[in-house]
Length: 382
Ligand code: ADE
Image (cartoon, rainbow, N blue to C red; front, side, top):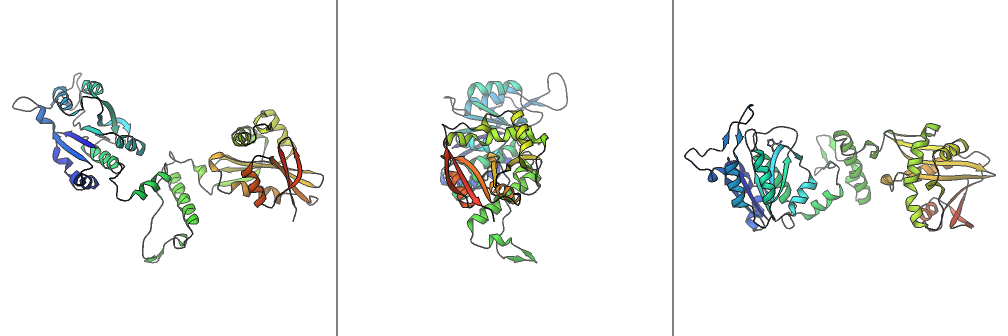
């Protein structure tokens, strides 16, 4: 990858020699050149700015030096990405860093003062593809610090640049979440302990703990990134009321799509019911709803049929499946069985292998009754 950076303060970019980018440069994987915009100015004063048309505070960077710089640096085949750091750009993200890391050539145009004449930006778009990028919602004195930050974030993603490829893999697993807290030796330091789960060798437990910590942090610090309902805690399981009908309808439509795919010939009522149908069965069944941070994320219904406690509509929001919520809802429904119930009973699709496995683990066995691609499962009470 080649990176050209144009600035009126080229010394500002000296840290590029030191960081990871410095190492990558030594290894020959990365070529970086920093240019003084004034190389492309004419006249004794080497002027780069002028007063704004229409008045207002500050100075605006003149178009001529920028046009000459871009013409000298941007590849004629249009393959260069031209990056314009500006507080009015799109916010810089990890996704953008990934995108830029795939480019063979980046040209950074670091503006100063009140910015660069708008016609330069339009002209740049004729030479290559332009990205106007902001580092955040604050104003710096120029684009140099942003160019440094963007370069560092991009360069570490280019294959071969990063020493520890595993860290990149792990980062992508935590995509969209803040990092979980990390610890090193000693295990006890000034009376503070490392969380015990990290000291055992249970990798599944460690992974679960880290995800939970990442979710919790993200919900607290960046609610814009993680909906709080993804976090454990702030949970409420209670009997449904008629006002839950709308959310139940939405949830069941989302939850039975995979069931339909696994059992294409079976007609699945939860996918065909309307709001009135849901309201009707809410009145006929004992229904529990699980909410996290207010969001309805799971439900189950049950009713007595002779001596069987019939359990159904066990649903968990697709983004929260695999965390044991379904199992808990099932246990809750079982625990609500009245004294006269001698068995629990439920029905699932004959092709729903995941469901069948889960129910088997929960103690359910086929009782032989199969109708229209459906399997009936039972488990004795007690
Ligand atoms: N130049 C000045 N402020 C900036 C910011 N927040 N991001 C990118 N470039 C800038």
